[in-house]
Length: 247
Image (cartoon, rainbow, N blue to C red; front, top):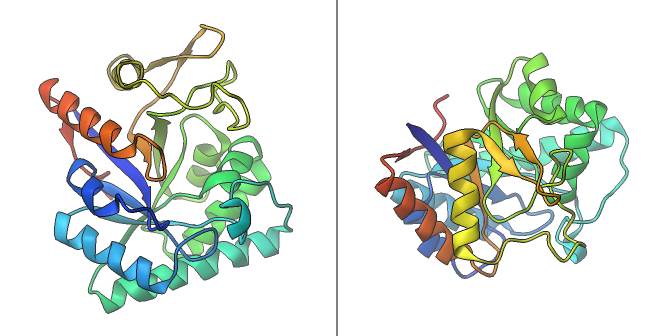
């Protein structure tokens, strides 16, 4: 059995280098919600050093709120916002003789798109028009996946190690005190249930079906390094191979 472990990176956190041995894909902030040219370049270099797949992590142009506050944009504005970020990271990849592998929207953009087919379609079109060979990471079972497939993108159903789930399959909003999983054993239990049994326990204790192809660790999380190491080591013990999604 194979699984991808992805991590949101290039957001100015001090643990990026230490996290690299425990992940197989990195989602690199493109300078809008976080990051800048130098951080992007350094993160790309880290990925090359550790054979980690390089992904773009476009978000809203909202550093004040770390891209985690909803922003209402027209379809053309959203398309242009994402496209400009893909170009920014791709330019750095070319300078480093590296290649983009995937795209995963960030924060509020991600959560809004998961519930909105129109927004998901716009994001998917921006990605496929930029490079139809890129893999699109989206919330498992959401509109992000179905709309990306409609335009011909290869997709990866994403699940979250450090977040709780609502009964409708969405992530618990960060404004809720139970949104984040803080306990390592609880986190590992959720990960193993998702990847081995294709199920997750929602906050109301209901059991939801889920498809897991890539597991997200938030690089800015309080327990990011601890959790990433625990997941990687546990999966190896379980005979699971950690590797990037194949294009």
